[in-house]
Each structure stands twice: as structure tokens, then as C-alpha cells.
Amino acid sequence: MSEQPEDEVPSEPADPWGSVRRVREPIAWILLVVVAIAVLVSALQLFGLVGVPVPVPSGPGQAGVTLGIRASAVAPQFVTGGIFAVPVLSVILVVFAGGLTDRARDVVLAAASIQAAALILGVVSFAAAAGSHLRPGAWFIFDAVDLVAVAAALAFTIAMLRSPALRLVRPQWADLEDDEEDLGDDDDFGAGDNDFGAGDEGFGEDVIGFGDRA
Image 1 (cartoon, rainbow, N blue to C red):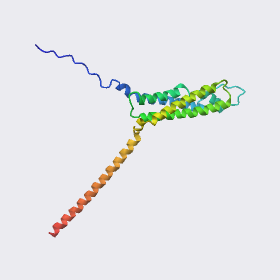
Image 2: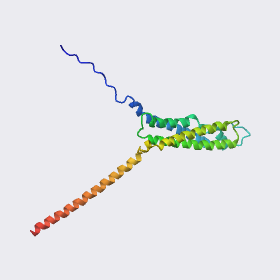
Image 3: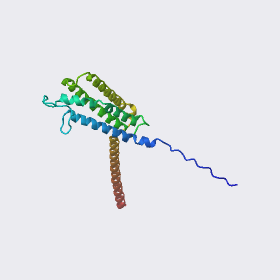
């Protein structure tokens, strides 16, 4: 009676979430690029550079669009929910969602830089808008709360950047320096080989001289 082979059970992959973990870092970089563009455009609007108009009402009684007017219109753009939440999400993706990625420290450093720029520009806009007295009501309370939220997000990112786990992650330029040092050590080893060859030549000359005397 012949034995029938049992049906082979397909083995499960060792890491079923591996494909998801591989896209964490590219998604984090895309999110940071989007936020950086938003902060850059808002900064161009704040300082009134050509080609980036500010949507503020104008009338015959206004002599021109001043910094205070631009700040009154642009100030909320530096403290929106996406400005401080998206960098934090990028940090969570590369640090907590499945362990550290290869360039987690670079992502966290970029997130901290974007948050710091948004916070500084937000404070400047807040001060200029408050000095212009163009926005009625208690707007400054809500903007101040948003600035505190941005500062808290920046503090979180800096704390992650200073954590021992990220300090152990070597930046890419450090590996390049180690490679250059290794190449320098190889050159020294080659120089030693040349010295050894020169010693061999001297030994050969001694042997020839001894043969002549014999």
C-alpha cells in the first residue's frame, strides 16, 4: 500500500511586516519635505518676496502692505496642526514603528530643524501681528497656545535626538571618515612593504659580495 505524500504547508515569511517597515523612512522623508515646503512658502510670504503674494485685503486708505499686515495673514500658517504634528509623525515612524531605521538620526535631525524654523518664524509673525493691531479679538491667545504646541513638539524631537539609542546610530559621514583612515593605513602598509623590499636588495648585495670574496 503506497504512502501518499502529505500536503506541504506553505511556510510563513519570517517577517510579515518587513515590506511595511522598509517604506517607513521614505514616507518620513516625504512628509518632512512637504512640511519644509509649506514653511518656506510661508516665510516667503512673511517677508514679502516677489512672486508669493499675501492674501490680505487692500483699500484706498492703505499706503502699502507692511510687515505687520503680512504677519497678521501669515502667522497662523507657522503653527497649524500639520506643521508640528507631521514632523513628530516622521520621528515616530523611524524610531518607534518597528525599531530604528538606517538613517533615523538624519530624519530626526531634519524634523528638529524644520520645527525650529517654524517656531522662530511663528514668534516673529506673532510679534509683528501683535504690534500692527489689525486682528481684533483674542486671537493672540490661540496663537500663543499653538506656539506652545510647536515648542513642545520641538522639545520632543530634541529629546529623541539626544537619546542614547540615536547616539549609537553612526552618521553616514563618520563611516566615510573611517574608510579614509583605513585607506591611509593601507598606504602605510605598502610603504612598509617597500622598505622590506629595499632590505632584501641590501641582503642580496651582501650575498654577492661574499661570493666575490670567496
